[in-house]
Length: 249
Ligand code: F6R
Image (cartoon, rainbow, N blue to C red; front, top):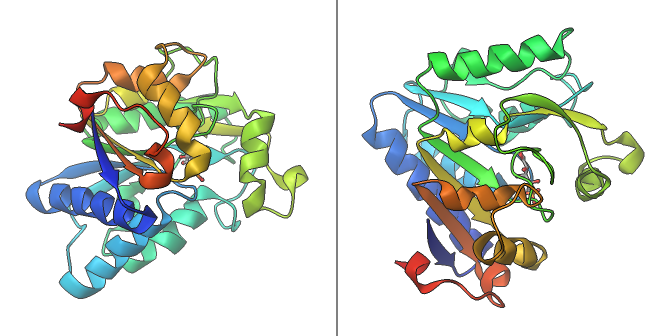
């Protein structure tokens, strides 16, 4: 695990976009794991700008998103499908059939979870997984208490997560109560992980990730066991934290 301190959220987003474009340019066939939420939006904006300016091609890229709300149609502006199209996919040349997001409206959700895992495996696994960090330590929608060996599955969202995401809806009552998410084991199988942590509200969670114990009560702690994790964290997220010196490289 290593940490790259960023001066600001903009700087964090530039660093993340650079890591992603280097991977895209230097790999013949690349499978990216994508995250949604507030943290990666500027990274996606920079990738979209880079495509406009430099025509960095995504024709050889496939993507798998971490999660999707249950009961929300793709066309709904709160679906993660809609988020990905509006924030990135519509601006770049990725063939839409190479983008994968679990369906939150599948008739058989258990089957949808199995199919999703199989599709990832059929693509040779994820080369680089982008992650955000929940204030409660969730990664994907793997809430505290999720066993470390879980694959893609259906989850009940905690009150804290629904409250945190209510800002994207017209209030908490509209926030779905369930989601499909890649499991902790699905995430840990990625060859490389890029975790973005921005803002003071994530500081405690980052501290626990780095200095707490590795335990399912704080799902992100498992990342310390992964052989290739880069964390990019901005000043407000790291300023009060004791960062183990070996992580700064
Ligand atoms: C999103 C996801 C979540 C978010 C996390 C942080 O696809 O899986 O784990 O990364 O909730 O969200 P933001 O970036 O909105 O603070």
